[in-house]
Length: 253
Image 1 (tube, one colour):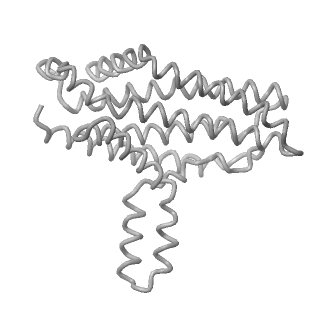
Image 2 (cartoon, one colour; image 1 turned 135 degrees about the vertical axis):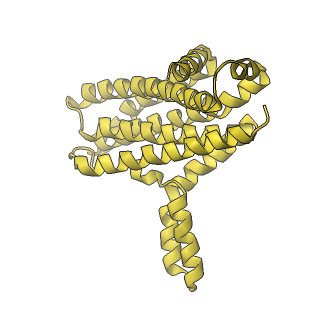
């Protein structure tokens, strides 16, 4: 475990020094802050508008962090040739992949935590209360980005950072539209095609399960439902991580 923690800490430290991360974080905080001003322009729906803009800002800028950093955590090590130094030590490839993902998870937790706190303070200043869905929405986005960072690491084992970002973004979009596959399958005239769409739905990640941004933001959500959704995201994340380890084992480094 110490090897995984060492790699994770080094990944976190390098990302903190990266100016791109700081730039994304600053713009994210500014956009979230601007949402409090735009909410004043709505007619009787200020709290809903403020909540939607804030959560959408956190989700978008968290996704940008994932696309810019997670897609290059493996490729950057190979470009700098530092991966050869790491693997010559008693460090297995399993430790390397898990350490990189843990480092990305720490980065995403810090970034989303900071943006969530800023948004919570702004929401409280404007409305004098905090909706129950706010922390739940941030946690849902965080688990979703942990999963996507695992997907990005899989792609980064065999593709360039640019193509890894494209593939990861495509996975994000497909994951939020996967429910449409079930609807499409029900309209198929042939049972075989319906079976294919259902299979794709169960294979692809269902990211809408982690989307709590559209729930009634002023009402509590059943803890059993949230635990089931979070468990789905974490289980899928671990499956993807083991796929990443298998892909990295096959790569000649």
